[in-house]
Image (spheres, protein in one colour):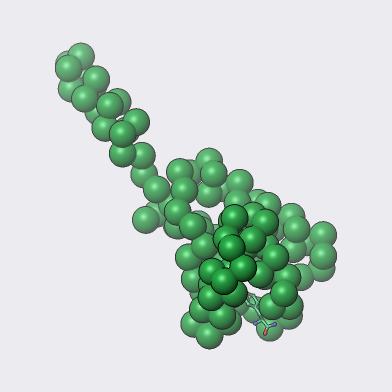
Length: 98
Ligand code: TYC
């Protein structure tokens, strides 16, 4: 690849990385307070937006909790999986391209 094109593409990647939405999914078993706690601790939401997002998931089936670069999105999903498993709840987070 010509050096100039390569440099331009690298610059574009650094300036404009692909972003990923992290979604929480509804289920019938995870307590609402637990979901609010996850949103505050893992996604750094304040109490009001954590409450709003939790209700959006409960009513619509899923909602976006945040948008991150790939490695951070993967880490958030893994943190939710780990804390849900440790507490015996089926709470699920996934990520997808923005
Ligand atoms: N539906 C759950 C309940 O009624 C609450 C809930 C909200 C669960 C959001 C998961 O991602 C979720 N206890």
